[in-house]
Image (cartoon, rainbow over all chains, first blue to last red; front, side, top):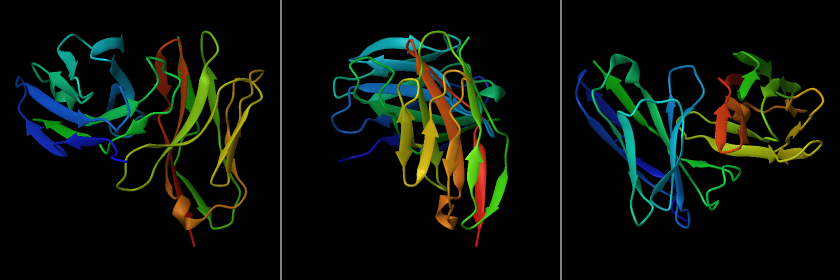
Length: 115
Length: 110
């Protein structure tokens, strides 16, 4: 069973740039959620994709967008990067038919630093 | 709104000590409750869950009981080991909304 993998592991960008983070979900999972984790804080929900459609969104601006592909892998795109976007970005997959109540399987995250 | 408040850390214990990490929640509706753990250098992983009032989740010697009357889901372990050193996150899920607490760092010393 292949777990959740994220790439890259680390990334440094300049304010105003755009970034794309990638996630491969665990085999058999059809739902991907993205979280932002600031240092010393818990994960904050960005959005979830279920069967290639956005299935819920947290309190993040539209410059945070995503995609899910037919193989259930996913991308998180952030435009017009701000310094406060510096954080660990976590991807989590699950098989829940759109329900949020099934356990999440997390990747190790992408550490984004915006300078 | 929905939120989770958990005990601030860090918590430092000696091996074989008793552990309690407090977690309380606010939610509209009937949440499912979770404890996730993040070991050094690893991603978050589910430790245990409870989906309705009075349910007890348990795993690896850890337990937590869903207490609706006190809106709590405290994590306990009778005898901690050095290998339990990690960051522990309480979380809730309700009506398509998943919320995490800020995390509690536990260090267990031999």
